[in-house]
Length: 187
Image (cartoon, rainbow, N blue to C red; front, side):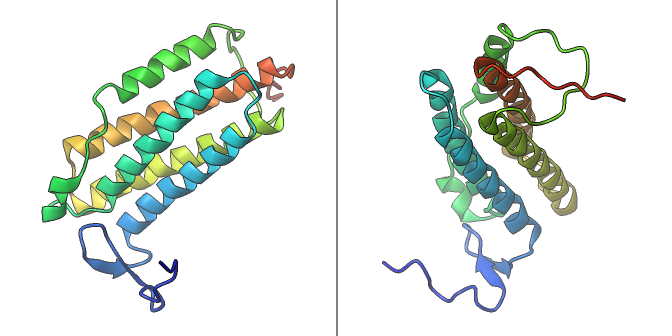
């Protein structure tokens, strides 16, 4: 099977639901941002320190959930393809909250803004956080401009909000585990 088809050579691509749209269509932008986030998460995972199996497990679930979310974003609401989609598990956002709490337990209380950076894996976690925030913004734009508010898109929006919080705490956690203190913003 060839990777290239030539089908997008004229600036159009197909949604999962079959419609051909411009490559800059809001749905393409939205699930493209999720794809970018998933790739950045893959880079973070590649640099995780040995012994952080719980975080590796987190990432496997998160990356799978992003694929599920991407399918929802790539499908128009009235399409028969909606019947083939799998919903995000109901507990995903609460599960992230639990992981945030667990990682936070070993961190000093945050009383100031911190600068992104530190160890390379933590810096990449901050990059992932910012990409995740862009995914959130793009999703709210999709919901607003296409009037496609649904329970699924609302659940994805909450999940992305929790995920960005998780990535922030993860960056702090990784810095601490690797012996690098948070660098606070000096006004």
